[in-house]
Amino acid sequence: MDKRSPKQLRTMKTLTTRQQEILSFIENYEWRNRYWPSIREIQEKFGFKSTNAVMGHLRALEKKQIIERIPGQARTFRIHRPDASSLGQMPDNSSEVVDIPIMGDIAAGYPDRVEPAGEIGRLQVDIQHAGFNNNRRSFALQVRGDSMVDVEIYEGDMVVVEPREPRDGDIVAALIDGETTLKRYIQKAGEPPYLKAENKFYPELYPVTELTVQGVAKAVVRSL
Amino acid sequence: MDKRSPKQLRTMKTLTTRQQEILSFIENYEWRNRYWPSIREIQEKFGFKSTNAVMGHLRALEKKQIIERIPGQARTFRIHRPDASSLGQMPDNSSEVVDIPIMGDIAAGYPDRVEPAGEIGRLQVDIQHAGFNNNRRSFALQVRGDSMVDVEIYEGDMVVVEPREPRDGDIVAALIDGETTLKRYIQKAGEPPYLKAENKFYPELYPVTELTVQGVAKAVVRSL
DNA sequence: GTTGACAATGGACAAGCGTTCACCTAAACA
DNA sequence: TGTTTAGGTGAACGCTTGTCCATTGTCAAC
Image 1 (tube, rainbow over the protein chains, first blue to last red):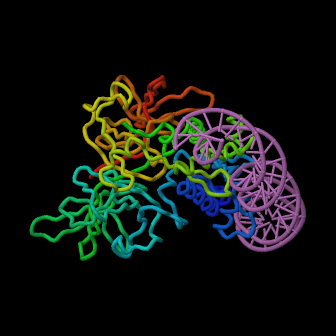
Image 2 (image 1 turned 60 degrees about the horizontal axis):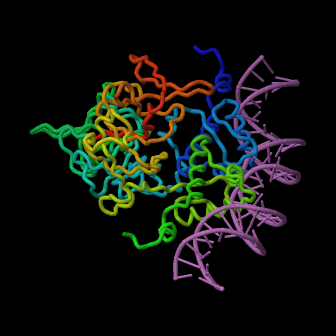
Image 3 (image 1 turned 180 degrees about the vertical axis):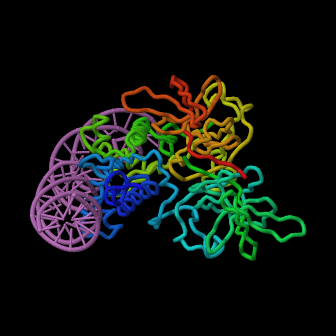
């Protein structure tokens, strides 16, 4: 057991919830806009009534060497996190996204009917390759969870999904328990089809009902 | 022959020398610093005695839709540079799809100079995401070998490579022993850069010489 | 010879924006 | 019980920075 208190643990390198939120927003903002936010923009986003609230968090992040700033200069950040799995998470705040949607959560139906709230980013993918026709309603879906790690699809990856009837062996985007996940579609002759996770620690099998399968995964795109 | 005079040609879409210089500086600045320059920094770099000299060029670039700016906000640029080479060949007018050659083997030099024989397919991708929209001469490279399995890049995957100067931590396409492979580019302050395989069974380090690095990997695409 | 794009000077204003000082609350130490 | 850390309010100061006005000059085109 780690004898240190939660407090002590937090003061070292880990970030507090608030700090993580601030950091995520900053990264997210730059990712969307290609430039950094001003302190007052951060303030506004979090509803602070003083810019100094932001300053406190920035100072903390700077002391922990997560971010670096150039004193006195506007909108200049530098983020030291080579690890950057952060791109994959992007909590919320993606309000002003302009382009074609990456659906973070298509829980409640077909992608056509999804609200803008489900969009967590933009990505235009069109692949004419190996049967991936330049066709209609394909959409990108960002992967959460590790149900497909055995076929090398990881959290944060984007999967291009084409809405169509699945065939045996296809990887499909499926609606299970109100959440869209990736599963392998299995259909043997004379038997009802079912879904299967590609992770040996997830031995679950899922029945296929109407509206379960939303489309077939055609490609994985991961930005580096 | 084009009957229009050089002048007329220039007024359309091409940039004047000065404008090209300004644009290059801005792009370059952002590469190095990860944030945009202020107008006075541009002014100083070019030795202008008035900020308005810069303003004129920026207005011109904006009118030509090369750059975009947010009025009144500091250090906010957005650079739209549709790849000149791709502009001509877009399949149908599906906005900004770029088709990227898939090079099976780029052993003998820069991708520019590669013979069409090295092309084993074409991949039509348009990703407006994480800096990938800046594709000048991007090309796709099919991965052979397992030198990058620790970052989940596998044999058969296609990596989209953008020719440009690498930064510390980038994954780069590098020419080693007459063969193009993927490596991690490491450059610590005050030290010469080197390349490193992302596979714990490949502990090799490689020095960086001229012509070694061909570009920076921006995305992985795997068709399922 | 006039027009218009291009390039640049010089000065000044106002908004954007980072920074700081004083002060407050709550929880976690020691 | 006093002290530290995280989180926040409120207001003000002043540098940074984008913007605008007036003016000058060059060069090719009409």
